[in-house]
Image 1 (spheres, rainbow, N blue to C red):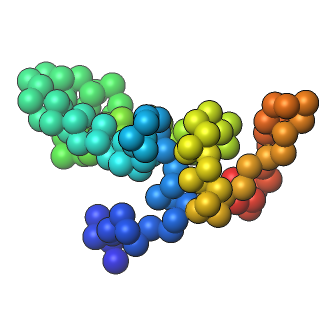
Image 2: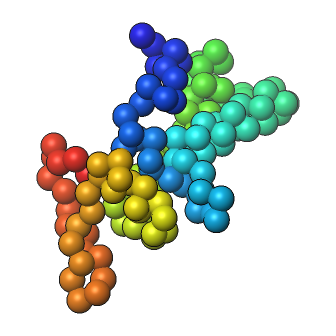
Length: 124
């Protein structure tokens, strides 16, 4: 199975629980947000004049047939850091959804979340 063949429903509950945008309506999932932004970036890049892509080819040392894919991937990953516990704790409804999906959060010290640095191999 290739990544582009995956269905959102086939992803693990913890991956589906991560959020990027909070709202009273349930927020917007992190993966969905990153894919939305990547799709918009692709549309914009495809409408830009060739000079824009040529600049990026020179600036990043990419091949012509790679430049849009690389830039779209980088733009799509812009909020990857929101998957950390410190961000996921900022919206209580989203935090609770993460906990229900099996993610754990660091303990609270003096009424404030304490975010210890995870070790390699930890779930966070």
